[in-house]
Amino acid sequence: MTRPRDNPPIRTDLLHTRVQAYLSAHQLWHSTAHLIVAVSGGTDSLALLHMLWQLRSQQPFTLHVAHFDHQLRGSQSAAEAAFVADTATAWQLPVTVASGNLPAQLGSGINKAAAARAARYRFLATLAAQLHADAVLLAHHADDQAETVLLHLLHGSGSAGLRGMQLATPWSVWSAWAAPYSTSATGPAGAVLLRPLLDTRRVELEAYCTQHQLGPRHDPSNHDQQATRNRIRHHLLPILASYNPQISAALGRTAELLSDDYAYIQRQLDQHWPALATVYPAAIHFDAAHWHALDPTLQRYALRRAAAQLTQTQLSAAQIKAGCAATTHPTGYQHALGASLMLRVEHGRIVISDPRQPTAIWHAPTPLPQLAHAPLPVPVPSQLQIAPYWQLTTELLTPSANLPPPSAWELHLAAEQITAALWLRWRQAGDRLSIGTGSRRVQDLLVDAKVPRTLRLHLPLLWLGERLIWVVGVRADPHVLAQPHSPQVLRVRLTATAPSGATMQSEAE
Image (tube, rainbow, N blue to C red; front, side, top):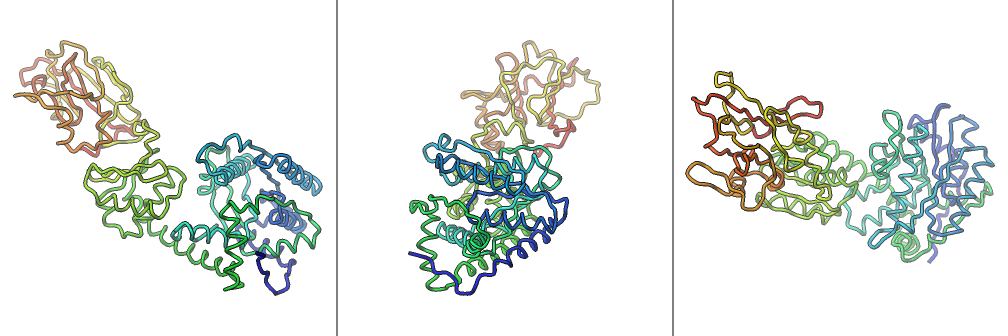
């Protein structure tokens, strides 16, 4: 089914003015601007390259051509790479052509389109960093936008998806799509990702190429009916055009309106985020009281933001809904959120974490100490960094020393009782602590103290030979504690430290 074209005559001469206006609006219309244009060799990108090449006669900005060959179509894709390189050379433009053996990287369950997209952005981000570029220009147009909006609509997306592609995306956002990328200097803001053709129709670009005799290459995979986007392009959009011949423009307006709504919601969330969220390398902790006071809309967007920051993945509407519902469960409840993330309801907080990085908890401040390696000998005196953010200190003092009272983080032991080596290890099944008139399982002590499940496994236990004497931060064996008549005191102290080494108050104090 052939899509009907609009009746009005096409003014290809207006496209230069349109692109120039976008460059000016983003402070890129000056001689020192350094632009990268991504060129596949197809109609859209070749037209954009030609427009930029001609605009350089009015403003001599630096223009660099970039092409990435995924090696998905063998000799055909190699020929397209050569075509782009030859075109750039003929127009006296610098060009970088890179390739990646994507077929060799695709395994079971890996989406080919998503993998190709990530590879392209990784290439563009690395090149932008190397060249200190101000912007990377893509040739997505109005019909691409319409297809994107419909694709997200079919997936049940909210405004985050229905806002479609953005005219301008800052480096802080789009470089995350490409991670890992080269971190060499990109300037304080990095290169903006700009789509100056987003309100230009495909038919206009086809007419432009015809007028300027550009001879673009055509990718046969754009007609593969197995791809959902292609079925939207060749079947769904023509049907919708029979109801509204201006359907692409209508969907573009919808995307623009929802983009404004989305931006407003993000600004509202920004106001809550510092008090709501504590961000760690592989986990984000939400303050439970603040979370439950949020409007449901902001809860959904907070969960979406957390997932995006941890995995650069957008959760589906169903996953977001289920995740928000999970936060109403009692302490100890766990929920597989999606994108390899786990949501846990803990005492006073809601934790979103990536269990694929089990040691990440040692690389962030935690309300209870976490022992990075076990067993760990504890000399006297000593100063041990038991994890990047936790330090244990032991020192011998006389009873007359001006000691603060013992606490969950400071233990005063009778030195004469220390007749064996001190050492730390993690909890094991069956561990028990003497409490004076008997003993209790460590597991029960941790539950009574409301220690979050995620902090129990690596909580340090202090041992005197084969005897457990301190469940750190929870309880100590009273038989080894210093008394007023003790001739010498062994002070054992845990301190939470900031990355710079400065101490910081623990949440448990």
